[in-house]
Image (cartoon, rainbow, N blue to C red; front, side, top):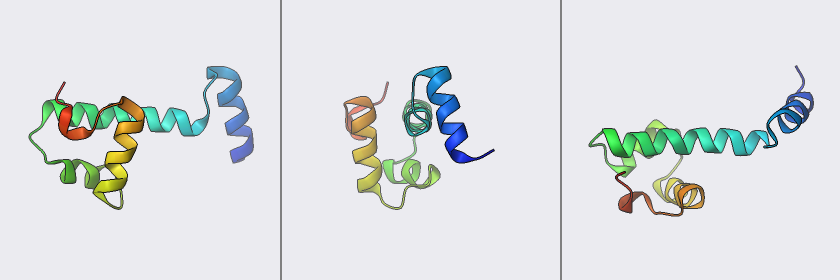
Length: 73
């Protein structure tokens, strides 16, 4: 399947872009890891494939409205 086709079908079906859907799922996983583990923010960032912690913190704040350190569920 071509990426443009996938993007179009997802947008038509869900009303959300591929980027938004993937970002939402990654944020959901990050929130679960903050709630259910004692991992550091750095460990969560690494486990989710972020190159550095600052990028993860910015992503998390954009998705949830909170910095990761303030979120424990």
